[in-house]
Length: 387
Length: 195
Image (cartoon, rainbow over all chains, first blue to last red; front, side, top):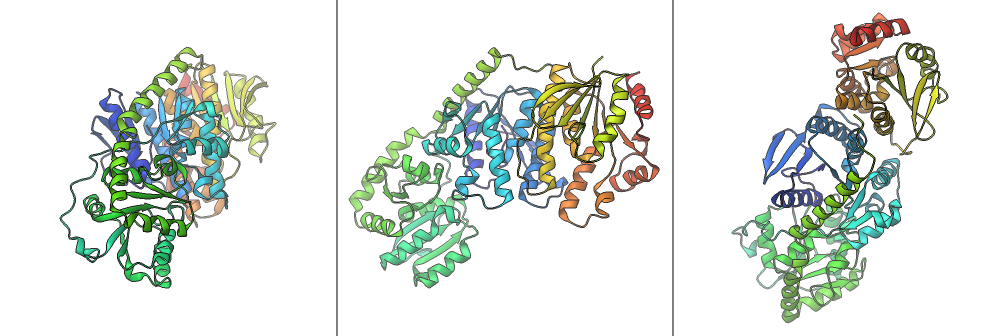
């Protein structure tokens, strides 16, 4: 399995996905080797939960930009993989390890599976503005073309990969991400009063502060609500933070907003316990694993009706949904939920019951089924190594 | 005997600059002595014969590149596809010989996979092309050249100046550098390896 991120080097959901999937596969008897990145602070080889993790350090080469950095990382990954050689199938995640997966597929004549977590066109809101973005988009197309099967985490992503990358639908397999119930450490012993007054209820946002996650919509909704009994806490960091700080000041709600940046998982766990509601106002969301985490910790959620979130949440049953992009609709949903403790309780109870649909155990079983199918097709075909 | 496998980004009829003309003067002479397979960037994937050489051409799979470094990585991914087909369909290779840095990544992968000697002919380097390493892009190309050159068992150069340049600036062991890239010198070096 090739992934540009893996603990302890985790950037977003992809790293957590590969971590949970690989260790669950290993627990079910699949021999998994993960080839990934290190900056020199983690071992070049170790075994974690039965998974052999091999890391390469791309800083032996210099790069003018992130795209070239990724190409350099892939170059070293292929070099390392050719020394390992003990695998029957290659599984890559996103364009970030696409070129190494494609190279290994051809030189070793082994089947390639690709999980496409999101697309460049989706991340860029439907248009590609420069050559870097077009380059990445074309690599994503190439990956979907070269892969034996493409895995997507939601119906929404199946549609996106089919529409944006022209991938035939019969090549795409939908396997939802899982939720790891015990992945959070116990809550940190912190006081709620550090974050909000006793008479303020906490509205929690967890996610990167980037446009596609819609944090600005929550600020606009807060401004429309004008309620003195709500505190809006933002956990996460990102390029939009200075703008959001300025926006909250311009909207006159600075005293109702608290930007915490990144927090350790035990602090996040405590914040979820303090929160009345968690909001995920994304404009683009292939899956929305963070919403599952909130559901698992018993916090009622409000999500935008977009992507994977739209599929996870049934409005009024295990959460509330609002029209994506509408801060007025979000404000209305917050008003409705925070004033109705009965609804809060019902939503969180139903949400917890729903989580059985999203387990890593189930994701691993479906992945094993896919591996067996692909290896079977490969073995019955004529495309095999000649040397 | 397994064939000699050449990898280049240009060879007639696929002409980019002067390298294709130069190679068309030497590779047929090598092919008259050793079974030769050649992989080249072409208009589309396919196989044809030319002057006793079995040529695997590969088309471009990605067309937009922010700069030459990204182009080089994707070019090599295409060249590797052709190289893999050439290896698997011809029983491997006894020597892999690539021409210039821009097609060397595929040759490093291929020689590592089958465990055969890697030769690289060096005609220019980033330093000789740019005068000096003034940008991060140039440094990136330089690092990639060094990475590939250090993996080669033999490097062919055309003049003593280039030999000294590779020793001084790229840290290449002088004993691995062959002065001269005419067919007789190349064939003599092949014979030294193949017996």
